Image (cartoon, rainbow over all chains, first blue to last red; front, top):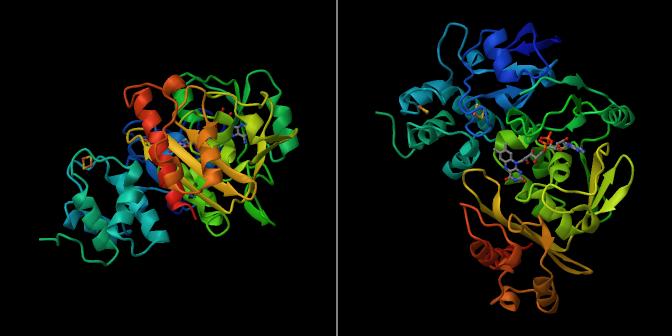
Length: 160
Length: 262
Ligand SMILES: Cc1cc2nc3c(=O)[nH]c(=O)nc-3n(C[C@H](O)[C@H](O)[C@H](O)COP(=O)(O)OP(=O)(O)OC[C@H]3O[C@@H](n4cnc5c(N)ncnc54)[C@H](O)[C@@H]3O)c2cc1C
Ligand code: FES
Ligand code: FES
């Protein structure tokens, strides 16, 4: 089996994977990082979104061997070392951006990629950017509000 | 998914050599191939990754031609073609979702030729040339029906050259579950005339709507095609829409594309 090396959340790691192992499975099973969720496994739901070399990708739809040598960021790397939530995570908590939390890792990673390239998105831009992320619980308004708030903008419904 | 051998060549020559082996297949961004391998609709024995192949990524303009490397992602086309070919950039920006656009490539899309894919409409309407490791193929000869192209099994799409039209626009009626086009229409107004390409509608894959082209050559306005709709005879009927519905959409979207073209 091939051995791949990656830098995940700032730490160099290596893993022995099959060629057919997708990145999501390598993260979860080989590296024990179960923050990245597999919802659909058919490229539809976005629960598995991580960043590979700075770009948001669906980790169920890229082979781990394709990420050999890459820098990967996952939800586990989002909070500070002391465990305090980053601004997007905190905003999700404050604005009811999650209920069951299953979609949340993918939502946070997608939101982080959006704010990286567009620090002050409009509500329409946020909704457009979330096209590939499905949430079965929140009805999205809380998620949109959270991302508005995380970008320092007033959201329609303020946190209570 | 069945396992496979994996190779990651760095030159087009080595990739072509690897692809000539029995059971070998190219891997672009994987946004179509991985899902089909999971379903065992594709079972390659060897995957030849094009990710590290040199010279296959980038967008460059020379005169009135925009050339895009076959390995260029949809996201990069959306950004890098924005100034030179806004109609194409907007099309790329509307494919799937941001994560799909960060991986999926123009070469993969054109090689796959999904009957509901977006790029085939742009390539056909623009009169693009598809360049492979072996030859140049005009878009008019390239698309040969649903999932069928002029490519042979060992050919690699290395680049696509688009003559930049005077005006263009792509209108996509999104099928909300798949995010592909239920119907999509690309209108290009060039110095040599108007070209209208329709995707998502026909059992024969992407096609040119020549009746509309003739009318628009006389008068490039929505009025010129006011009462026209597509021919439903060989159109797709599925649970998302009937042939007649798609034929109607072809007319509506073409008019919208003409009005929106810039
Ligand atoms: C959720 C989702 C939504 C999508 N929505 C849309 C949409 O709205 N519109 C749209 O057009 N597409 C859509 N797609 C498809 C997407 O655009 C794919 O990226 C594209 O169809 C295939 O490109 P790829 O680089 O991912 O190719 P791959 O999946 O790697 O390969 C596809 C096929 O092309 C071959 N191939 C790949 N690269 C080359 C090459 N350079 N030369 C020769 N053969 C090659 C492969 O062998 C394979 O047969 C969507 C996909 C997903 C998962
Ligand atoms: S698990 Fe990857 S998109 Fe749903
Ligand atoms: S919070 Fe439950 S799926 Fe989104």
